[in-house]
Amino acid sequence: MSNLSELFGISTEMLKEFEYIDECVFSTEIKEEAFDELLGCNCNGPCVSKDECACLKFNQVYDSNGILADVTKNGIIECSDRCKCHNCVNKVVQNGKIPKIKVIHSGDLNKRYQVITEEPIPQGTFVAEYVGEVITVKEAHERLLTQNTYKNNYLFCIDEEFFDKKNEIVTCIDAREYGNITRFINHGCEPNLEIKLVRTGIIIPRLTLFSKRDILMGEELSYNYGTDFAPNLAEGPPCKCGANRCCGNLPFSKIPSIQTS
Ligand SMILES: C[S@@+](CC[C@H](N)C(=O)[O-])C[C@H]1O[C@@H](n2cnc3c(N)ncnc32)[C@H](O)[C@@H]1O
Ligand SMILES: [Zn+2]
Ligand SMILES: [Zn+2]
Ligand SMILES: [Zn+2]
Image (cartoon, rainbow, N blue to C red; front, side, top):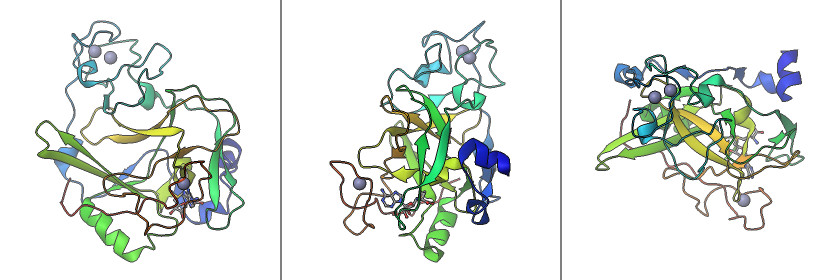
């Protein structure tokens, strides 16, 4: 446990409220099809061309240092065991290398903890993966009914629409009981991180955070909690992000009513 304290500033006190995990854990309610493997690519050597590589086709491309060129686009499919490529740079999230970041107290009793970076982070860098329990939308609803959604909410639901917008995949991750350092990253109205859904072999995406711009050493990390399900409404709790253009309220969760895998 002292290792977590050295690595991320996560104290034994903090660990009284959650169990630290490196990878997501999956609810038994998640349908089997969600674990279906994606087809790999047939590249010979590293994957380079969008025209020839089945993974890069739908994808943004990392540069040779694993940096994303365009941080505004979503949807990344990384190469996996099913791919024929080798020495491929399209494995940034699964390689797991992240900048040195740590949890500190914000000094505000309501906002509680926050995460800062201990080194400068260039734009487009993979910063961390939001891990927790991957649960169904039904379970997310049930949890919201029993939790105080205003205070210390760790449930994140995000949807993706494919093709004709009739195919929708909703991914819900709850980091309340199980999580890593990302459960301490706060909402920002002018955030320096961007959420990216990244697939590394199976249909269920991984929820990851990339830097939206160059970030200075010591800066607080933040991302916009707002999604289609958590719009920024006046009914949300007061936002203390400190941005010049702070919207005033935290995005407030409205989990969709459809069932998903
Ligand atoms: C995922 S947790 C973030 C870590 C949290 N600060 C903690 O100490 O555990 C989300 C909760 O943090 C608080 N929070 C996050 N961003 C905030 C902000 N900009 N202003 C005030 N409170 C915030 C809210 O209580 C929110 O429900
Ligand atoms: Zn590859
Ligand atoms: Zn390829
Ligand atoms: Zn704000």
